[in-house]
Image (tube, rainbow, N blue to C red):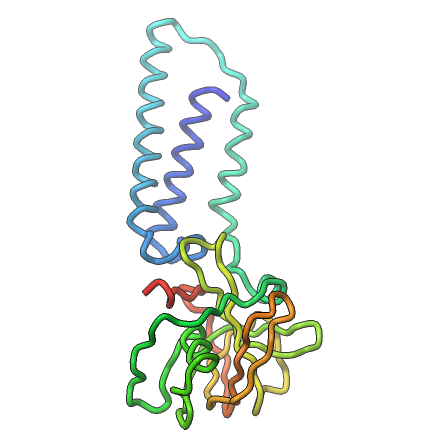
Length: 232
């Protein structure tokens, strides 16, 4: 691969990182707190690309230059694909094939006095599985639907520590007044009450608590599809 092609790839990668970092696209790859690093990496790559072009032109002028193999420019195509085709966030396919990542919480903040109380999937699952703090409370939780091999519906959010590569599902079993049609990967806002029922994830035997649904409505996919609750 010649230096010009290397510079082009670096420039395009840098531009892709800047584009992702200045929009919500980067949230498909890493957690929200890493935006400054994504932007910094984009700036460094673009600067390195420009420096490479300047150095090569100066060197070529000094030695008269010679043609480089053009086939090396084909390596730019995967970079263009990365820029033009944004991958979807992990969804139900990954969720039903990966065991729940729910773990006993180290500590939980007091619940607000509002009713219904809005909770993340991780927060509801932690409280429902390991505490009694949700008894008598109405909650509102947002996540995407996943159906296991038996058609059991779950409300899921993929929780991550750093990036999408380490994302793992946290699942809430749903019972009660469910919509007549359940479509995997559809995002829903579910209102309901604590259900004193837990089951075991068939993948890793992890705990899956339940929520008794009183109402549900479809919602748009959030800008940040991942749950970072346990990073806060």
